[in-house]
Image (cartoon, rainbow, N blue to C red; front, side, top):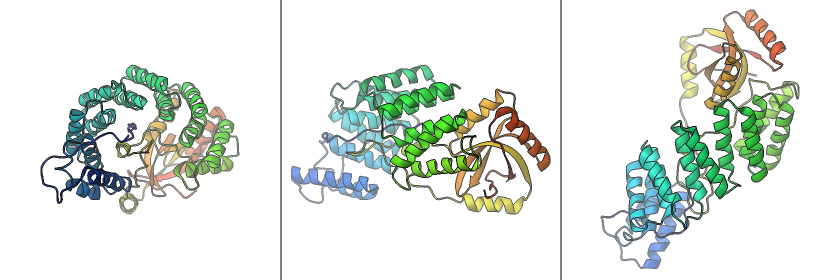
Length: 396
C-alpha cells in the first residue's frame, strides 16, 4: 500500500450537509465558532461529536464551503467514503478554487477505489493557481500512478512535487521506494541522502535510509544514521524504538559485520490506508493511526495447539513491511538462492521473514547457513518456526 499525502485545512470557506433544521437560530459568528469546535473534535479523534456539532448548524451553514469541507472530513474519519465524497463535491461546487477540498475529494474517491475520479480531483487541485501547497496534490498523483503500476508517470509527478517544494521529504521517500521496487537500491540510497539533506529533521527518512544501507550490507554507514535517529527522534517514538532495535541487533551481530536478522525491523515506507486521511488545520502530516487490536496472539496459540510441527530456516532478514522483505528476497533469488518469505507473529507484531533454505533437519540448515555466511559475508541465522500463518519465533 502506498501512503497518500493529505492537505491542511487553510481556513477557507466551507459548507455542510443539507436537510434538517438548526436547533437554534445562530449568528454567522456562532456558526464559525461551532465549525471551529467541530474541527477541534476531529483533532481529538472524536468524529461523532464533530458530526453532532455540524448537525446543529447544517441549515444556517449550508451555503458555506468550509462547512461541507469539515463535514466531508468527518464522514471520512467515520469511514463513510460516499458521504465524504458528496460533501467535498458540495464544497468545490460552491467554491471551485477550494484546492484543499479538491485534494480531499481525491482521497475520498481513492478510499472507494475510484482511481479515475481520484485522478481528476487531484488534477483539479493542482490546477488551482492560489493553491498554497500544490506539491501535495502532485505527490498524491505520483502515488496514485505508482499504485496503478505506472512508474513513468509516478516519477513525473514526484519530480513536479520536488520542483514545487524541494524540501518535501515524502517525495524523496516515494522516489526511493520506486527505485528500490525496480531493484536499484543504490539509487534509492542516493535519493534518501538528498532527502535528509533537504529535510534535516525527518527521522522517518533517516531511518529508511539506514534500512536500505543495511539491505546492501553497509552496516557502518547505517549505524551513523541510526544514532542520528536516536538523537533526534522523541523518546519512545516508533522511529526511536525501531532504531534502537537495529542498533542492538548490530551490536549482537558483531558491530559492523552486519545485522542480526531475528531482531531487525524495517521502517514502513508504505503505510496502509489507515493513513489515507485528509489533514486538519495546522497539521502537515496526518497523525499515525492507532494500533489495531486483534486476535493474532490468540490465533498463534490456537495454531500451535493444533500443529506442533516445526521446521528450521536459514534466515537472512526480518521486516515489518512486506515490500522491503520482498526486495531482499528478490536480491538473493537473482543470485540463484531458493529464497522465500514466511509471515510470523513476534512479540505481538506481524513480521515477514526472508530465508534461503529450510528443512526439518537442523544440522543440514546449520551447514547451509555457514556456507551462506562464508560466501555472502553477511549473517545468517538458523531459526525454528512452526507450521502456520502466524508463527512464533524462538525468543532471542
